[in-house]
Length: 470
Image 1: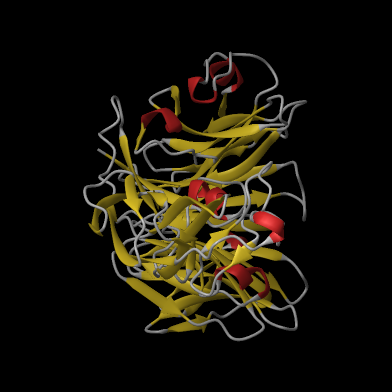
Image 2: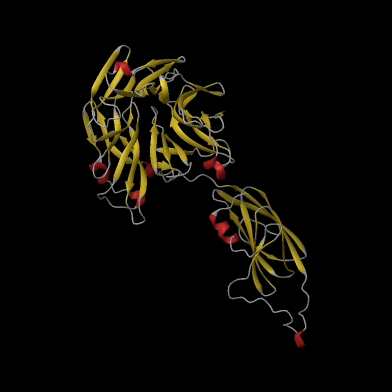
């Protein structure tokens, strides 16, 4: 059983640990009696009978803290489950409940009653039982536009889930690990959650990451023990390796029909945009007329957005090309200063302008919108900061509607803080200010056609939430 910070502080000052889990210590400045002192001519003090208080936490999550004076010493004992705590008989004790965050004391039984702090005159053997209950959800946040759902424990309390992608139906997919303290050194499996958790085992020694989910399937790339990277798609309970052009490959996007797109290296090392349909590989790179290409988005109509560059490994001279049927529409060359983070199937690009301070930008058919001024003009009330310069930002995902999400890096005296943002209807929205229950949102990295958003609640770790519009 876990204990919240308040209970942990109360129990953490222990010097002696009983078999039941209780603790005892001397308070600072209180001296323990000296053996042989306390009676005439050094005689021992009269014997004091011992009282036993049986503490039992039978429902919910929390601890019970018991404080008393015994043999002239202040004693504090804590119990997380069932304990027998010993004190001087006849002494008074204060019994306090320390619920874990998200829980409340429902009631006492035995020598304590009600639901508050209890005072007990300790007898020979007494019992106190604590029952905790889940705290009610906080009232709806005024002005909230989204409800937040924690995705970190989709497999139950003994596992962690790291959601990476979101489809238009609201399903999420990513990685799952069963041993949270050891996950950094273990093989993670792949999961898909659509209200029910589906799990796909990754071979021992391999590493997998998910690039897309749609139509009840997930896809991405898996690296084996030898370092080879191969695209995969889920089928039944298995991860199925996809055909390549001869070298490494990966999936970036997928539609509801199960058509996946991404890239593959040829035997000579060229990077080509590819599509996998019904298990067959289609080389899309030859349709772009460029040296290097990568298929980054596909919609349910089969339109594929491709980033294609004139030179291999180029950071300039890159175009957005939309492939549909036999047509290839070149939407234009991207500005050299724009770093493309994501592209919609319509060819809209989001990312950041790589200037002295990176700032979020959107490119559509030859026109770029720089969001630096809009972001700098906001007061950022969720972090208590005034508007100002030095705000780095980026957009990380874009929906077919043109709505996009990302994050703002805000310098503060402690070093820096992040805030998740939404670009919608020509305005920047601080997502933390419109979410219920109130939740710190580090950044947002996926958005679907329904307006649902995947956001991180920490820079490191596996704490992601799903935001659903009200």
